[in-house]
Image 1 (cartoon, helix red, strand yellow):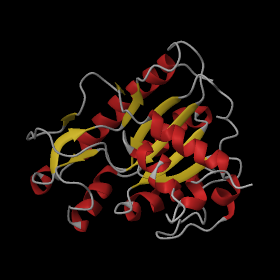
Image 2 (image 1 turned 180 degrees about the vertical axis):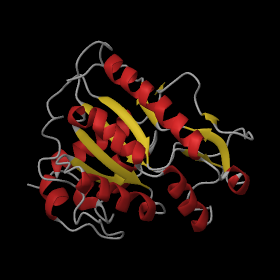
Image 3 (image 1 turned 120 degrees about the horizontal axis):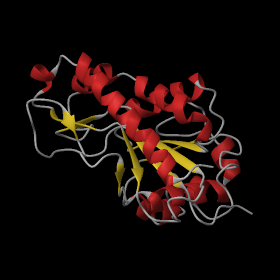
Length: 252
């Protein structure tokens, strides 16, 4: 297991490498100026204190579509957070809620076909997905990354599809592969996540990533954010909700 400091140091180097590489090859600022702020962030590691930052913990990595929208705009690409990759994402409770739901209803996650939208992996969870993260009372280290590092002016469901396609083409998926190359063996659980409006962008790319690297510990979920646990633990647990079989009480 790794410590927070270990992960922060590795991600900081990878963030600089990824940012420099994107700046060197990016030629679309003029055409995309009204759609992106110019801010870039590839990776973040959550600073929520669960245990001493020198204590070894399991590592969870979420893969989504972007960190936020809006903010100041500039005529050149710049680092979204000049303080580095360590930031308070407020997403730990939501990740905990997803893991708890899976642990309650493993058979559903692993075997029941995912509906509306359909999972490109067939189901919402790999067999025994949390085997490496279960049982650690001190929590876990949370890495958050996205298939696209550009901070957009609008949310993905509100910007033209052609712009989303262009942004994904500009960024590519190399940063995900490089993350796996550096930390893949040390990440204990991967979670692909998206709002229902963004699944067309995130879920197929996440599925391709999982297959490409033969990842055995993964979950596919609704969007993870600082408030998602309110839906996971409240709305999704209502018997009439379509996701109740996955998020409801343990099936006896």
